[in-house]
Image 1 (tube, rainbow, N blue to C red):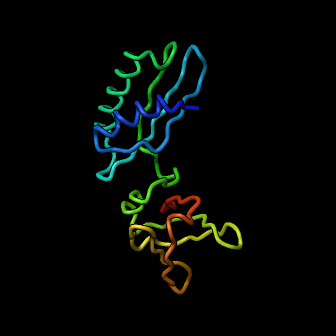
Image 2: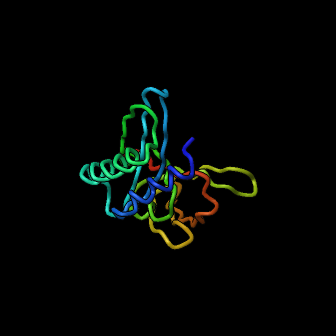
Length: 150
């Protein structure tokens, strides 16, 4: 588990580069930890962005002695298999197929469809054989994953 203090330090480093923290994990042993930071940005994530943020985070970690012992720092994009966490992430995937778990009165329902558009509060999907257009509010989405095209 990542403490609020460590998460805030990481978020501050990432925000300086117009990016957002998607997830942070720390695993391994006391002697050799692996710190993984997954980030996303509206303009996309490049290897240069990951390298720059990695240097910034490592400097903060080393100055404040955040991780005891040696550690490996991994900074990368979340990848296609990671769930979308924020509404702004959906815009980058317009035209792609999504798999959504949506809360409804009957429990969780799975919706699979092509993302047509994104509004402030909802996303529009094209679903089913009849290409029905369905509006799904972000607050009803429990999980959203981009379906790989292969």
